[in-house]
Structure formats: C-alpha cells, structure tokens
Image (cartoon, rainbow, N blue to C red):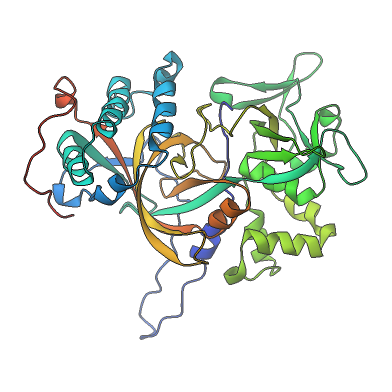
Length: 419
C-alpha cells in the first residue's frame, strides 16, 4: 500500500454523534447548540497540531505506561519507515524536522527498554518531550475516535455458483502519481481520462481480467473495500491476505449515512451488524446503496498481516489512521478517550494509550477524526462497530535542546503536575 490502506468502517460514529440537537428546554430565545462537525476541514495550509506550552495541560501518561503490549512492535515499524530516504519528503512538519521526528521515536524506544516504572516513564516524558495536541474539529481539541478492522470472509480464487462477487486488482492502465495519487486511466493513444466512479466502473470493460478473488456476498465485497484489507478463507481452509493497492480517485461517501437518511435504519440502531442484517433481508438494494459511494478500492495479494499506508504492518490497538495531509506520518501519539471491551457488551471504559500514526483512511479527512486499528475477525469487528467516542489526541516529540544529551537522564523525584 502506498497511499491509503485500511479505511474507516465506523463512519457510523459520525452519524451517531452528529445527529439533530435536542429541542431547547428554556425560552424560545435560547440558542440551539450546533452538532459536532468532526469532518470540518482546516483552512488551507494549516496543520492539525498545536504545541502545549502550559505544563498543566499536558496529560498524565502513567496509565498508558502500565500496559505497553504490542507497542515495541508498532514502534519498530515507524522507525523502519522513518529510516527510509523516501520519508524525508514529508518533513519538515511545521517546526518538526525529519531528524527530530526520527530521534523522538528512537528516544521513546530507549525509554521502553530502560526498565523504568510507569511513574518514572511519565516523569521522563514530561521532562524530555514536547507535547502537541490536535486542534480537533472545533479548535479546542475535540476528536472523534472510531475503529477499523480486518474482516475474514469465505472466498474462492475462481468463480463458482456460490462465489460470484469479485474483488479486483488495479487495471494495468491505472496511472498513479507520487504518494499514490490517482491521475486517471491511460488510453491506447496515451491520452489520460478520469477513472470512472463505482457505478460506471463496475459495468465497464476496465475490470475485465482484473478479478483477484470471489466472495459469496456483494456487501462483504464492499466491507472489504471500506476496511481496505481482508483475510480470505479459501475452500481448502487456507487463509490469504489481500490489502489495499489503489482507488479510483473519488472521495468516500458513507453508505451508513445514506441508509439513515432514507429511513432504512434508525440512527440510534445503526451498526455494522444492522447494515449486514438489512442487506441480507434486502439483497436487491445492495447495488443501489453501495453505488452511492463513488469510491472503489483495488486490492493486491499481501504477505502476513495487513499493512498501513506507510507499507508497514498495522498493529492491534497501536496503529491509528489520520489525514496525512495535516498530521505527521509515523510519529508517536497518545490517545485519551473511551473504548468498549470485548467481553463487556457495549460498556465503555476510559482508555489512555500510546499509538503510532501509520495509516490513512478514505473517510479520515480532518483534524477532528482518528481511526484506531482493532484487529482481525469478528471480535475486532464488534469492537470497531462500538467505537465512536470523542476524546483528545496528542503527539510527542523529543525536545530539540535535549537531543544531544544522554538518552536516560536521572529521574526527578518531584511528582509531575496534575493536568
């Protein structure tokens, strides 16, 4: 994957949290609060991060320092990416140089290997790292956290009576520019035309011979496209991975929002399972609704676990997808929100954790959006489908003036200020 990888499924969250405001209970002159607009774009050229200058506004990292599961694995992927010469083209990010971004990852890796306790790690991070916050959708830091995952679907490499809905590799004449930007389709004479939207593309000759595998359900094909990757279980039981390769160059439009708008599913009942149930009961409507999303995703075979837009493996609960036009690639982030737990139904719990910004989503296009990778299979799907909570998103960068000092300075005995 070069540009986009796993794309957010739970754009449902934007529907659930941005519905009509409640009627005012006071006087007629009482203003009606506007719903959150998590997709609000930043002004042209503005970045999503603002440096925190008041130490009291820096969060307490201690809870995140207690559970470091999978963090080293994700961190290694970001360091590999940032060590490639090609990563330099995306820096500086504001005042953050490529050198500082890579040094920040390496310094954090050294801290993880230092044997420090959680309070010591928290104190050192506060002492040695600058902390930035996302400006959020409203300029005050509000970010909608959603989840995405890798589905597992039964499939066949050849068309059969059961498996007759294909996923496709990209056409040979699809032309991509730097960073995977879709330039169009090159014709026989070399002329360039725009790639068709989903409805026209699926009925065109462009996809003939591009079938990569066949699924049993047309909506499963769409889910795979929205998630950007899938595990396919072949008739002999073998599991193969297909990952994002390219798209047709169109912006994403939410089928979930279309179903709510048409009154097919109540807003308060909306979930992935509700959508699956609806289309199983109304298979004749799948094409009508998925074609309202003009974006079409192409796949390619992949080895091992799915990869993000940095071409590094995504890591469960440690990889996030953001808008790479306004957030820094591969860098260390800190999430403060609420998340569901697999064995607790729909109950939400406070979540504080570190993650690496390693992916991009077609529906993630603003400072007020962040997508967290939840894993593979049904349990991950349930988590992703229940994840739609506002919170705060922070990034940590090694202070430039400390980059030449020893990696592990003495720990101050003074407890950190409470945020």
